[in-house]
Amino acid sequence: MSAAPNRKQRRQPPRVQVALGLTVLAAVAGWGIFTRWGNETALAAKAQDSQTPTVQLTIAAAGPVSEEIVLPGTVQPFIEAPIYARTNGYVKEWYTDIGTPVRKGQILALLDTPEVDQQLHQAEADYATAQANDTLAQSTAKRWAVLLATDSVSKQENDEKQADAAAKHALLASSKANLDRLRELEGFKRVIAPFDGVVTARQTDIGALINSGAAQGASLFRVTDNNRLRIYVQVPEAYTPMIRKGTKTQLGIAELPGKNFEAEVTRTAEAMDSNTRTLQVEIQYNNEKHDILPGGYAQVHFRLPIAEGKPRLPVSALIFRAEGLQVARVDEQNRAHLVKVSMGRDFGKEVEIASGIAAGDRIIASPPDSLNDGDPVRIAEKKDAKPAADSKDKK
Image (tube, rainbow, N blue to C red):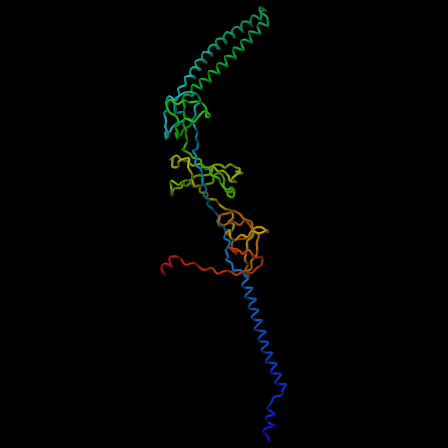
C-alpha cells in the first residue's frame, strides 16, 4: 500500500515535461540558426575574398641622374667637291688617280681646247684693233677741242669727234673684257684641286670629250678632305633640350669593334624637322690619322645629364580610360587609388612618369580592367627564383 504513493510522487508534472521539450527544441533551433548564420557569414566572406583581385606590385623607381643614348650617324668628309670642266675640249693628260693625296692648286688633268685657243687669238686681234681705233679717236678729239677754242670748227663737229672718241673707248673696254674672259677659259684647261685632300673618284680618261658645266655630264674627279669629318645625327625631340654645342660624344664604328673615338657637337640645326620630329646635329672629329673612312655609319654615344631622375614604370602599369592616363597606387591598407599621371619619355618596356607619383610608391604592375578607385586588393607574394646554377647542382 505504501509503494503506490511513492511512484506518484516521482512522476513529473506535465508542465515540466513541456518546458524541457521546449528548451530542447529552442536549443536545437538556436544551434541550427547559429550554424547557418556562421555558414552564411563564412560564405559571404569567401565570396568577398574571391572578388578581391590578387595583384603584383612594382615600386616606382627613380630614374638615373645621367643617361646614355646611342643613335646612328652618317659620316661625311669635312669638304667634298666634284670637279667639273669649265671649258670645252678633250682630255689630253690626267695626273692623279683615286687615293692620291693632292694639294690646293695641284693640276689633276690637262685639256686640249683648240676652239677656245682660236677664239683667244681672235680676241687678242680684236683688242689690238680696238686699241688702235681708240688711240686715234682720242687724239682726234683733243685736236678738235683745240680748234674749237679758235672757232676754226663748229661746235657740232667737235661734239661728233668727242662722241666718237667715247664710243671707241667703250669698244676698247668691251674687247678687253672679252679677251679676259677667253683667257680665263683658256686657263680652265688645267683642271686643278680646289683644296688639300684625296682624290676619291676619277671618271674620265685620255681623249674623252669634255663639255663645260655640271649639267653636261659626270664630273671628272671627286676630291675630299678626310683630315676632319662631319657626323650628322638625327636626335629625337625628347632629347633635344640636353643637346648643346660642345656636348661630348663617343663614336663607335662597326668595322673597328672595341674602339671609341672622342668627338663633340659643333652645331645644331636650331629647328625641328617637321617630317621626322628630330633635330639635326653636327659632330666633328679630328681624323688626321685617317682612322675613320667617310661615307659610312657610326654609332654616336651621348652621355646626357638629367636634372631630376623621374620615376619609371612598366608599360603594363598604365591605365587608359576616359578620365585620362592613370596608374593604380596601393596604400598601407592595401586599397587601390587611381592616380592621374602624365607620361614623359617612352623607353619601350618602360615609360617615364613626369608627374602624379613619386619614387617609392607602390603601383599595381598590371591592374585589372574592373578595378575602381578605393577597391581592396590582395598582394601576391613574390617567389624568389632560384639560380640556374643551384638547380643544376641539385640535379
